[in-house]
Length: 392
Image (tube, rainbow, N blue to C red):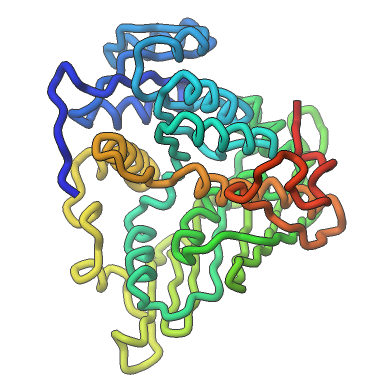
């Protein structure tokens, strides 16, 4: 779609809360001519001053409520996990568009309030799941949308990244990522696969490998070392998600696979490996081909001629491309690239996994917030008095 450029005086004004992680968003917005980052907010005034000076940002805040009431068009939420939904909700209520770090929320009450705020505000909301924008994942999404995998019935996503030391640096992770048992940080693994399936998860069963590690105080992590979340989709598909932030091992980062009736895909597993694919329509025999062989014919425009900003951005270009597409949706008044319900489709299964793993891994229904009209009455009965209703 052709972008309508904005004049200097009509640039979209951006404010960012959460200065450390927010620096990646600052670089992305400053690379987009239609936006102007004018405000930065963080509890630590020294961090605010340093980031404002580095990026030439005029307005400096230590109170989010004050920043969100100022003259802004877009608010970026890049704070710790439990603040994503409350701060996004407040920004929407103040009439701002919102792009938020992952996950969208940390309990079902937050999900409900966030969804209602998006509906009532009529503003754009996007959960910034950068993994859907990596070059391989964009290409696989295009191939899936064109039907080249046939009927897709199995997918796999893994996030394997040892983060014990980071728990000691960013203390919130010790509670919200490794201090709860379940697939607590699953959107990186689940998000791309759901886009390929064009479906949502309806039930999850969650399993853990046990506890083998302790934190710096000698306390066992509440989260089991490797978590496996088995998901059934509404059309009968099967998705397996593995999250491991504790095991001692070299980082794999993200891994994905996909299986359909006419093709399959395996992402790179690690050192020296390359993404590989087999598509019946493009091969006379069942044999792997390099994913790169399909770029010339099928790569979407977003990665066909990537800008220097995309090539230099973090998370395989995702940190820039997600912002670019979000800004385009505001300028052209089109659907948000990952709207509120798609954001919750990626978030809620991980929340529900905590109920499953704590109840002997039984299958638990995943609520679809599109159809929740009364809260919590319309939730599945097993969730109404569960630990994931509210952590307040």
